[in-house]
Image 1 (tube, rainbow, N blue to C red):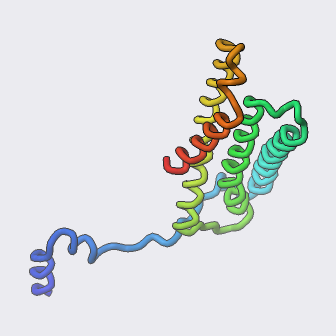
Image 2: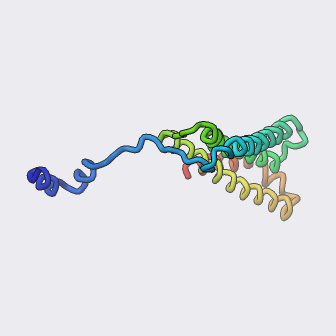
Length: 170
């Protein structure tokens, strides 16, 4: 035993830290409530909120897609915002709903990291899209005669693509 301790002291710090490490493979998810009688009620509440959010955003996307009068820069960005909102809510809610229904819920490390990535990506994209939408309204109000040239379809597409790419690497 003495020899092992002496050998450990001689090893460089990087090797010493590699010897005594455990790898996290999954996380156990805690419920919203310790009272099991509330799980069905909470499941119904969260499921209804999730359904309303997804349905509302899908209706926004369909209205913008099928109505040619809504093919303007403001509605183009609103289309992107609704898409990001669907991604944001869908990255977290299904696992949360599962956690309310099963007795012992867990998530893998990779699943947790994927969920965190998509949540961060979509939430930051929503905020940056709101900034782009504010610029669109600024251009419409302060430069009404130059608005159509300032906010061309190509420029709007570049702005939206920039938001998606910048936030993907955030």
